[in-house]
Length: 241
Image (cartoon, rainbow, N blue to C red):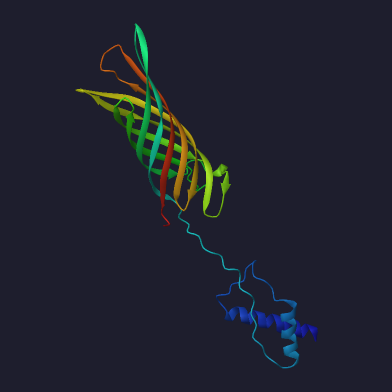
């Protein structure tokens, strides 16, 4: 009698599976509980029929497979000091400046050598306007690379993350004094921390920069070294938005 029950049980299970084509069995599909199986067998003994089905697999929320960054846009505001040294073969003198610096940024995040779709490395272009306390202002254009170290996050939640950053920039600065247009080579290194939430990045950086000005008079060297505290605000525009 038991062998007949077993055959009937598996026959009903197979029939039900064929009828429910959308309920595909997998390793995640749960078996019938002993109570449900006993109800089926008892129903057979009493010539009673009952509907039964295997529980569906848990529904998995589908996440977009495309997580590439389209664009990063934002701005920075810095404040600090700069020490400018002008020298020639006979001597030198140094000027101290207070510095206020504003920049707009346009860039894109890339994966490069990291795990696929993580994109912690940013290539960006900035256009800046800098004001010195000596009533001198100048503009600059720089190309930078930034490492957003989300993989070393200080603290991380479902929708936010706090992590360190490193960046390096190279570019050209230009100013006008009277009828003279002066250009200079600029470089900057920054270390900071970023709070990222819902695509927005709120950052705080310490930046060390230098400018080597092409002085209009031959034989005179004009070098400036600065230190700034910089606030940053960026937005990461992604393909899946």
